[in-house]
Image 1 (spheres, one colour):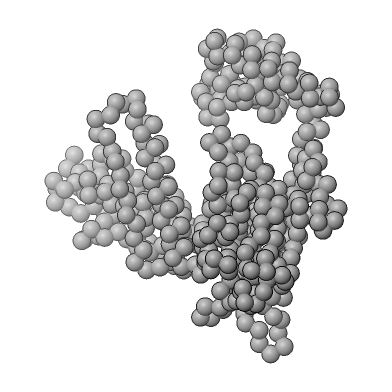
Image 2: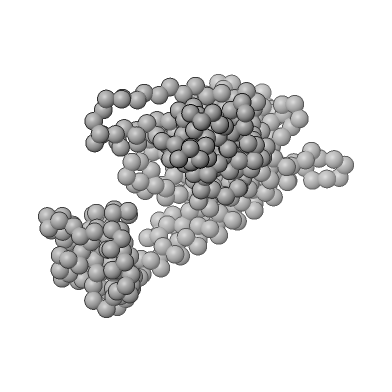
Length: 451
């Protein structure tokens, strides 16, 4: 018994826990329990040593209050570092501190604690995101998602941002006021034949590359045409992107203006500025940059890094504008290829849905004829599972819309039900599901008949 207590480092035995050094420090090469050493688990320029607690996994009851508080601190600091790393455009400023104020109700009912924990987590992440925005804004030479208005001499006036989701930066007026036409209007004025792609059944976003000189050609010199405060070297206008927004991830079409901007403050540098507006009026920049799995976000990160590496013109070398345009041109080709691939995949999925000879066409029939014990609820994905004949398995959402169909061997179905991943639904819920399927199938058949 005493040996066990000594091994755990019980304070009553007067010993020091093995994972802590005298003085309460944490080993510099520590790795969090259950993780392998990686970019955030090892010593990097981003994360000082000791960012994670060390030692073997231990339950909360085995740790002292001090040790548990240390873990809370280290986890909070790691969240902040990860948020900065996802969006950083400059080095981390020393002395960065975040003021976090939290509210915890110790007397709340047990059944409300899960919801309270979720609200606390959302508020905490929102505060961390706000701190990241403040840090980036403090270090950047201009506010992200805004352009310079030379008439108002400001980045914060009403002219400095797009007034609507479909607007792109169209250049400056003679008096230095930013112009924000609709992307389709720009394509129409240029007689761009690709405008038809915006109105197909499966829309194909349009990508247009412009030189910076074209965007300031109408601007008078007295109103900032040659200003080094915000010198646009080039721009890629993109739209319309179908993005999931809102609490229910509804799809909305938005346009982007992606600019390479030179700022002559100290040593001239080239920055990437991504300008766009969501339907609720918020800037699109953070939404895009915090999407780790987005190919668009990856392309923007690569472009940002390449622009930051542009060197000043020396001797007979290329000008900064030519280098920036070459980088933006590569981005435009990458985006155009990516959007066309997505459109082909979406069209293929629609063709599969309308082809009644394919196995997925049996989903509706199987859902309506299945016995109650053949209809399950996927508790992890919050979807409905219908097990049909010939090993067919169909997945539906809560609106009764068919998501996908697969073929599973009987052993897979038995294993998922035995493990509790798929659970039998109450009779009332099954009836509600069938009614939703009927409503959804009625609207789908009407759309098919109109074709």
